Image (cartoon, rainbow, N blue to C red; front, side, top):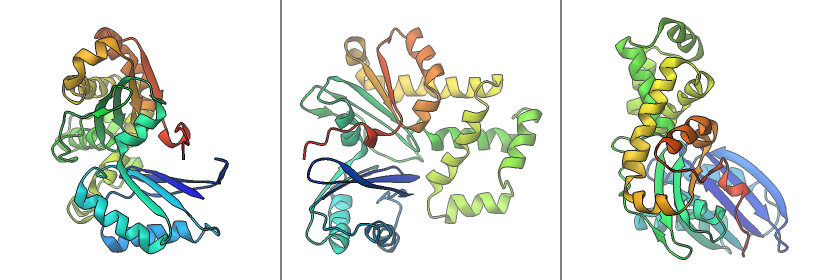
Length: 276
């Protein structure tokens, strides 16, 4: 049995396949980001998954934000072996999962989920030209970026009144509650990303439209900037829930820049090639 997981900082999708590549089980848990969660927290999530799998797992493929760091890989391999002792463990970052979605094609990939990431895949090799410095420094256009911008607009008082009222009804905006999540919470990036649901819901509002476009300027300028020449020749694949739900405005902004071959993938794990 092959267990494949695609994890962001907010949620993780688990799919189990039999020897004929038939999916026999799936589950969603909270996300596993090794840069954020402790060993104990990760163990608990893995145990919640294992209890639902009655058969022996021979291989685990785990794709996550932060999975490219050698220290994180080594740590995750050890934790997975505790639960799946006889399985071969493969740990990769979220871009490797995204690359599987395009089935050997050539293109630029841009992840816009809880966080953001990008690369160019030439059909054989993945080329990544930006460092991973996390949500506090990078991640433009992601869920946590937009959540932060919404929260700022509310805190500074320039969110329009009609949006402010709905925002207050939707979230607990007590100062102490916000500070607790941002500075003592288990997953601050996921907490911020939750506010992006509001942005998606009200994306037709003129204020939200401006906020979205400002973020997309940074996506095309910074997140995708290093792949400008490749984007002129090859498709762009936008991956993740933020990209999927904002695809109309992403298309509009891409077309303005001369990029017309675009694809959107909400859940990469639903599109992978099972070549095991």
